[in-house]
Image 1 (cartoon, rainbow, N blue to C red):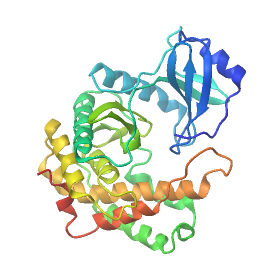
Image 2: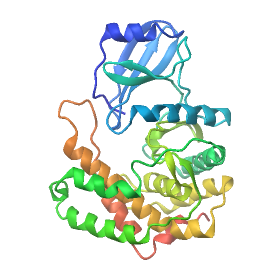
Image 3: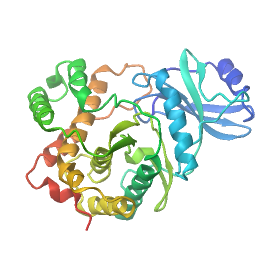
Length: 320
């Protein structure tokens, strides 16, 4: 989450007046994240999140996200509802941006999850995969494997971000292009289930949020993304074996991966690490200086990539 576009108070009051959620008490920008402009909206009817869609989220994709959240909520997954106005519309316009008002869920995002919390997150991911298996919607993964080279090129000289990074990325892109699988089980995935996109109270998952990278892709790739974001130290230098096992154990409570998926996990994890290395490098270079946004250091994902490149990387995905 972040703030790129600011909202005029009169425009906000007019927007909220379309809903049965009371009147505006306050609206504060949220600096975390990098994708959309987000605000904590408090009204006389409660707390909500106001999201203005920027950058990588296309307005034409918003009905897909609304339908996906409706589907998951109907299957009992802890996802936030898109609030609809009196005419039943969830997608609005404000400050020249498409926008939604979204249910506020209880819970906190973790910075140092425990093994038990990793297990709960793995189980929540598995339950989400089971719930979405019959979802009819589809969306190309705009941040998937076939787009990574474009992101690298759009960033410019990667050596400006980290010395020597250009050669590392070029070599990894060539390696993954030659080996990326084509026949693994696929359906809509979250594709960004970092700890800051999971709300928890104690060891209980109370919310899965920020589905704006959700797309049709390999479910095992979603496991790899979650592994890369939950099992490592903040600097990416160390994979915590206990947390990694707990995450995989939680997922296995809900879904048993095929042998082909298990074999592919180290490769998919290399791809996940490269994806976030590239998008963080891109945002490091191109984030506007006046944006209320916390830029994320790409280096920890270079460290993850190096760990996933090791000969023993398969051992990181063992559940027991």
